[in-house]
Length: 199
Image (cartoon, rainbow, N blue to C red; front, side, top):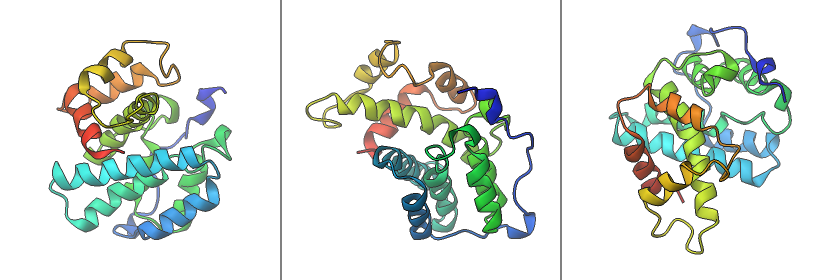
């Protein structure tokens, strides 16, 4: 797949008049069921959603309404990946614009892969979805090959696998480094957060 074709060619999304408008998390899950037949991909989005929600509440001091923004962005960020890989992000952005969803949520989804979509992460929400997307999937892959899965998994074992290019080779280590360079937390702190919140 040629990734330059994913470039969105715009950086403004949604209508500012829709600020504060969200779909419910239940509606988000319903959209996932309709758009994403692959259970593993749905799980990835649910895991990123849970991390986004937890981070906003614990680290950003978000109220429940704001946390819903974070959770919804995580839940839907890859919603069009399975059925529309050649126009990944475009389809879900258009759908959310059609539903009059808050532009901040749409921008967050558009910025989860800056070198692919051409949209830079700006807000804390944007930056954290970029951080969590690859690392969440990587840590889940590492858990799946362990008999006890997440139980007893530590930072050291994750770091060791990150340094092994053949393990989960589809996970782009450069994207992880780039994402981390945009926030104040280090790799180990993020890994620990994911280990404490993901299952």
